Image (cartoon, rainbow, N blue to C red; front, side, top):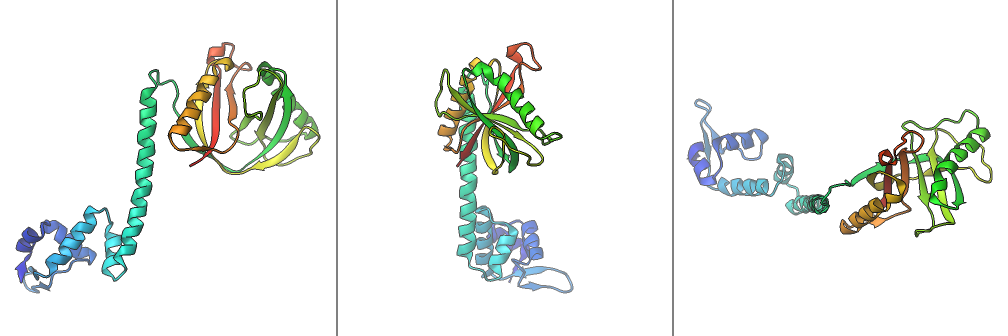
Length: 264
């Protein structure tokens, strides 16, 4: 029999750790003197101590070690831990890549975040515009048409409104565009206004401050970011107009969010 202090030296575990493992029921003393409370261990328990220490160094929790000690297959526990570590490694690799991407942008003008957009009920309308400058005249007209068709219709809170370009390429004219705005309930439809529920969507988000003619820089940045970080584009980009001609006179103050639907 070995006293706890000597066992501590042989096992390379502190006395505090041994008392903790005893309390957790994973490494009990072979004998505890009922009068003095002294704890004694057998040399064979050094193997168990080494096993526990090894598991802790591998990142297993006390609860996971308890499951192994209760007779569970340690290979299954370790396989599950490995899968979790791989997921964490992938997450860390993505974070490292994102930081490198930001550092390579000398002005650090853009910052990309990942968002989950919940399932959303919207009214939607499509048209073909002669030029991009017509967008801010067309969007209010869509809202007025929907309201005339559905008096009292309420927009969702917080508001969520965006446009999608449907051509798949940049066009100078003949621009196909779809407008979507979140509402609280469906309503009447016509040849222009329709209602649908958009599924839950993961997006990459980036904010562009400035006139719309410069927004191509933001699109180039977010597309490059998606490619370099292993994302797959899952739909048209969404342009959310936060500040614009309706509330900011100076185009340099206009704020637009680009949301790029993705999978990974």
